[in-house]
Length: 135
Image 1 (cartoon, one colour):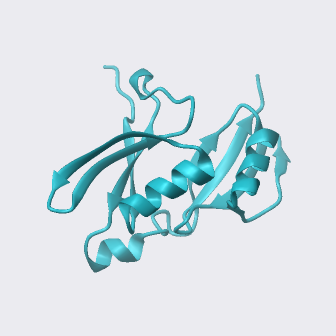
Image 2 (cartoon, helix red, strand yellow; image 1 turned 45 degrees about the horizontal axis):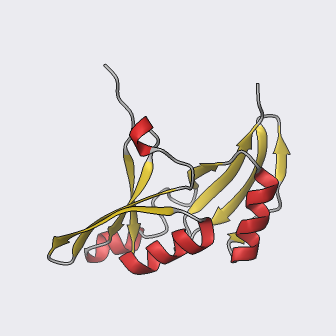
Image 3 (cartoon, one colour; image 1 turned 120 degrees about the vertical axis):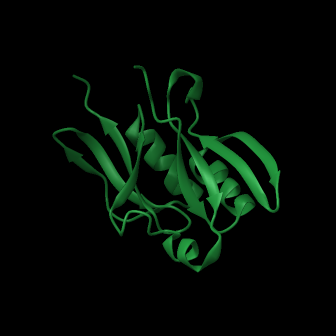
């Protein structure tokens, strides 16, 4: 069996607000934005250089519906780091993200596995910006 995670659903308050933030702050590419009717859209985004056709995971932006889903916006991992954005140049991407106004929650750290810093997205979900050490 060959399988991979094609997309990860991320709860958002508003499609266009989220598209703008991920595009303008992280440089993500809008892969698809299809109207499904009834206020629903199929919105897929991925980091620059990603190739979902090769099994790389993308984000499915899902507008929260109802109080339970709305309460989970920004808290999908219960306050832990939720997503891991890998990079091939930590210093370059960290600087670009800071310039774009991304809020980092800590200074960069250099760990045994690589360079990392935690940042928050527009809703407060925690992400790691991570450059793994080459083996």
